[in-house]
Figure (cartoon, rainbow, N blue to C red):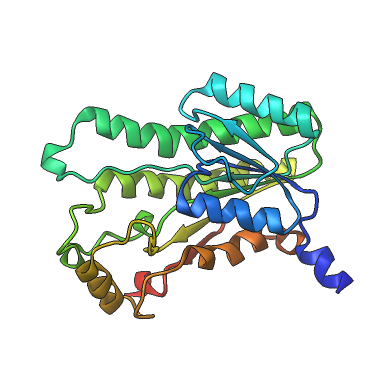
Amino acid sequence: MRYIDDLFGLKNKVVVITGANGNLGYMICKSFHEAGAKVIATDIFNDKEEEPCDSYKKIDITVESNVKLVFDSIIKEYGSIDILINNAGVSTFEPFEERLEEKIDWVMDVNLKGTFFCIKSFVSICDKYKIPQGNIINIASFYGIISPDFRIYTDTPRKNSEIYGATKAGVIQMTKYFAVHLADRNIRVNAISPGGIYNPKNPQGEDFIKNYSFRCPMKRMANDSEMIGALLYLASDSATYTTGQNIIIDGGMSCW
């Protein structure tokens, strides 16, 4: 048991999670909290008082000064930030012919610029406070490597957008870039790319679920809990020689 604890134990690790209010964000917070980590949940809206965490910080990741301020407050309160999970992300769903520039800017600001600001602030803190090792995990998407099959969107207007896929491809590339450029500072950078996750609180259309399941080799959508194993691995000391990787968790959808 001690061997397993040494490999996978996260007790007292300080973990900062962005986008904590979403379904996946909530599950990430819950899982790391139950694993014994000190979880600092962050989001632009503090609308989940029951968030399973040690503290909740309001943050706007699209504003660099706000990210610095919040990260500084965390380091002063907890003495360290061991793991940063960049989970915050947004999308837009109208037909691309109707896409307004403001919508494009919003998705790019959150998904790309916000992720960059969080990485930049985290690295600055590691340097300033001489944190011996750091760990960054980015949440990308399988739509960063494949295009949506629009034949499955028969009863939902929430068709995945080109700008969402482009920004998630950018997150995957940033993962590789920073894995290389931060290796000398002993900071690992990895990503996971979830496939379609079933939302029990706001279910996708019945036809969409049926079509998606037919298209997916494993014949179903994912549950948010099925993303957690890879995150716990990447966050733990069992992954000390793993960096620059993008773990795709999509039931085999991207194999076609």
